[in-house]
Length: 413
Ligand SMILES: Cc1ncc(COP(=O)(O)O)c(C=O)c1O
Image (tube, rainbow, N blue to C red):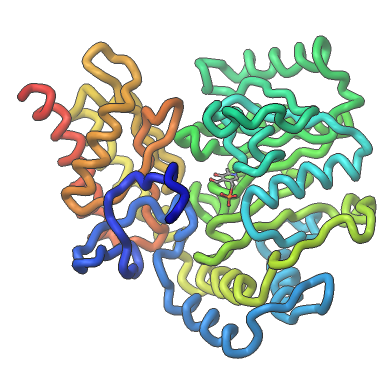
């Protein structure tokens, strides 16, 4: 049996999927506004990706990159440079976001010869030991696993636990005076928009401060774009909404178009500091994932799904504000492109996970899949594929509206 502690949020078993829809075993359709937690930015089984993967399966399925060169991986390494800042010239392929995060931390340590990583309250970077160590989102991902990786300190993320940008900056400066010497800091690692923590965005001013700080102390600035990347936030990368260029980008999820894939993009001068043989892997950048990753770029170019999401964003904003205005249980709505979160509260105005569970269930009963997030699961997250047709967006958000309204009905009843 599947590990018994894995209990899906929804009760549905997916039999097939297409675009923004999944179908259960009795062929009932659901709107999938989870996008597989940010993987399916182009929807389920995009025909261009399916065709590329099918073709690749018949040509070559596996080519291990430290044994033989693969034309698919070489093509990806060339193509990706069109999508990242020109200063980032090298890419290291992995199987997942967590592995890419681990790799970025190992790279920063090897490049700088230092060990400390600064990351932020509310962050989720994955579940491998290093990725969990730099996370500070939920103690559940660390419970029973201590000691975690040493050399990690957490500072305030603006907007988390009520911290302003000024307070977050003050705290980080204090930390560098009182807890960690700047000369020991290898990396500053940040999600420009926190994913699991229900779409809180670092103010551009804070991102610029981090860029300046990293330069001042000689540390690498790493942005975790595993969830926010590939158009999810309204720009291809969320860091583009601040006036900065990071030293490393960590990507994953949507990068593989539905196949497992992640990567680290870094500067050539930093790549030159890495020891030959210290980075590798069996499956990273395998030809199947590369065919899907290249087809993903092709669709971003030929169909411009990001522009489609931007075109619909204003309409989505008004639908969300209507939902908020109709319910006293919706305390706040955040929307960055198609990273959408609703914070729910109870009758006393306190963050309320039970209401989130009720809305998720009511939405699923009506044919809409959503996920939760935020501290203790007190937020609903809505992540439609970027290319969701407007009619489906309207219909899906109407189901969300009904599900939220059902809270008042069930409370009154
Ligand atoms: C921002 C962020 N970083 C890293 C990860 C880890 O990626 P993966 O689950 O592919 O290991 C996630 C997963 O949700 C994420 O949201």
